[in-house]
Amino acid sequence: MDSQEAQLESQFGQSPSTGSKLGWILGALLLAAIAVVVVVSARPSDHVEERANVLPLGVDSAEFEAVAQEFRAISAEAPGKEAVLATMAERALAKGESDKALACLSGIICEVPQGPAARLQAAEILLERNDAVGAEGNLVACTTYGAADDIEVTGRACNWLVFLYSVELRFEERKEILKQMHQFGYASLSDSKLLHFPHLLIWNSTTARERLNDFLEKNPSDASLLIAKARFQTKVGELDEALSLLTQLRKSNSGNLNVHAALLECYFEQDMRDEMQAVLTEAGAFDPTEPWLLTRMRAELLVKDAPDQAAILFRHVLANDPANPEANMGLLRTLPPESDEAAQCKSKAIVLSEIRVKLAAVQEGRTQEIQELVDMCRKAGLNEAANAFATYLPLATGNQQVSQTEAVHGDS
Image (cartoon, rainbow, N blue to C red; front, side, top):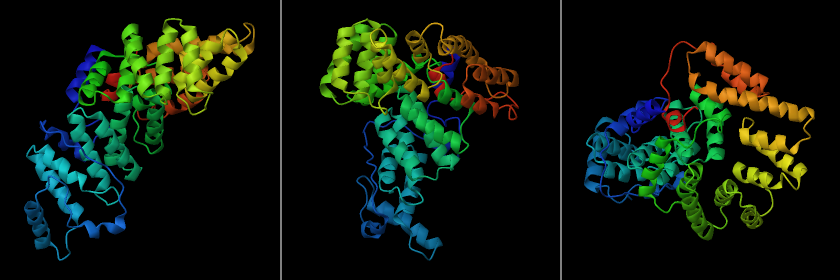
């Protein structure tokens, strides 16, 4: 893990593993003392002309006109506002004037051709400032308005979202981004690991906690970041600290099911069943769209008194995360010991432990290790994962760098 963490620290602020012509942006940035909030909004494109003379706060009108004049000198057509602002942002970044660049980018609406790239540029500036919250809004806008198969813009934004969601332990949202990346052909083998083995990879690495703490310095009251902090605390045995934080979040975010899930996890580690039941009562009835952790905690509480109901819930978790070792073992505890399904769970548990050990060695270019992983997946009944990793066999031509997200996550 030490080498992976060092690699992440050296890569952060540079391009993610996808690669992009936009890679120069982060290298040109300097941290500024004045925080600029970029508000992303979807504005109707038919009103663009009405706002042509309305410039964002922080954009000098004289400079805007001078750049517009440059456009007029080489083209008979009047320059679009967004094209001028994009040029100004590019020049500002080249000079290290990131505040000015953010101001210019905030005036480029999402629907125009420059929109998705502008949102990506703004996100990368904000990430350089550890503003994960502001960056996420821009990245989501980029992936929403950008062409799904555009690897240089949408693909790069997806890489950043996967990184953020990994640090923040938002695995359900990360899965949707990873599925898009695989669908449109810009996923790496590391991304396939994250998609198919989210709970076999180490998620509580030192690097991830450090990045989370950096993000919290910028947004100390953000619920998603605080929930992740509490889950990290629970994982390393800082149960009193986690419980204190989650109790506060429960009061201020009573409708947030991720708070309930994290609190249940903390109570579960301390075998506080009465407290778990109180949280579940507050959380309400089971919802198929609820966090996987919440569903698994429901099941854990039912294993002893209602094993059939618990089995249904464990199967639901496994339907969304087939390689979840805790859900697999939980299901095993609900089944008749001599049943065929129990035998399958036992066999799967053994193979999952083997996969966990194997994952670190599975890299692009290592044909034997990839083939062994494919065989293990088939043995465990993980056919979708087996098919996904099999696609890397013909392309195994050389070792590739570990992505920054994998460095955050870890393999074993």
